[in-house]
Image (cartoon, rainbow, N blue to C red):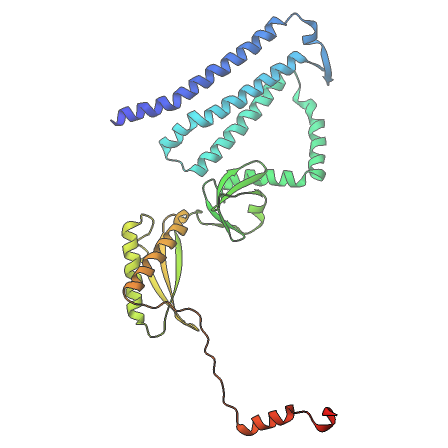
Length: 337
């Protein structure tokens, strides 16, 4: 059975690869046929512009485009079909896979550009002047773009965040979906996508629940009415946490759940239930399940959850003061006239 499943998985991965390769091969075969067919045409080799001592023609441009486009398609195909098999073999996480995919793609594209320029006959030393001009342009007009691009490389290399991490930015909880050249895409719990410049993650404070140790502690506040047995409330909360841990796969037995008696509030005795979970992405569901379970337990044992209230005390006023006030409020004879 295991061998059959493995064969099915291999077929599912290899079949798209073969079909894509056949499609690409047919497209490039047609383009090469066109180039060969018009090889004797003068317009194909006539100079369009010159770059140093090299006369650039349409033929050379098509060759360079073919090399770069082929490298682009080949790298995309490799990251979708070939590399995942290697990742699964070595059990790499999604963030590390994304990093390797990016470096593999950038490396292939840089290599393809160099090969295409050499094939065309352009000496790379000629481009040093253009590189200097581009460097000046980046220094003055493209500071933010250059900063975000370099920040993206640092993020991919140091991995303070990675694809799949649960992060908090300005009290907004979301998961990292993509780390692009200029910006990072974060998907919130409301299925909203936030585009954040890469430099933000290196300059500002970002809470990463998945960094290093993904375990997090949930704090569930509870208030009960005055007169409730605090020891009994503690036992109910501990039992609720134990029962939820039996049904949930993310609640950890170590560290153990802990009940903190916060103090005496204005309207209630305030408690906090501390529980640890293994995956921060289940924080909302776990908190909601615990609240439902605690509410059922309190209803069963008649533990009252109070609402905010205020007591109004009315002081009695002496009769002499009332007479003085009534006399002062009556109009005089001169006021009546």
